[in-house]
Length: 252
Image (cartoon, rainbow, N blue to C red; front, side, top):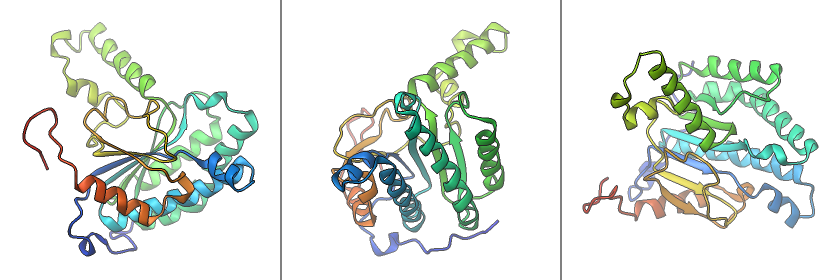
């Protein structure tokens, strides 16, 4: 395991920026990007993977601790079968080609979402990438794959209900922390920012519980065009906001 990332943080060059601990990204606009260029949607997904690599590097360089990206929604099963097959294949190729570099850069990778509907080969690949990077202490990268926020909360409630039914938990002892510990993101800070690309302004069932106090940043760029300059603009936007968490005084 590498003890240091390959690149040095760039936050020192931007002392005016407030660096968030956790960024969530709804990577939207691959299809629009491809259509605007007269290319098939699959080319947009390939370009989207390149943007993901760049965003991982930007998070490392600017000192972000956690990055959670929305890769494949549990609602995306309604897409054409050939597109779904391509996306699944793209995930396999991304892991195969990038696992060594992610590990070398001290990135811990976790795939969050349901394992239902995934073939055995993909499940083994997910287990491999998580096991290989489990002890890394740098950027924590969560890939939300076959994920839905409502389904995540429902599953958490089922787990808690099972504890109550077997007498291991009293209903009156259930707190927000109890629910938080039953989510896929247990042990992680809630996202400070949720970014959505492509100009759409909704959260689309992404981190519903965790984003209660997240700053929402909607950018016009399609995901493949989300480069370092766009990343810095988001940080500048975030740095100018006051986070009150329902109170009067802003919290840092």
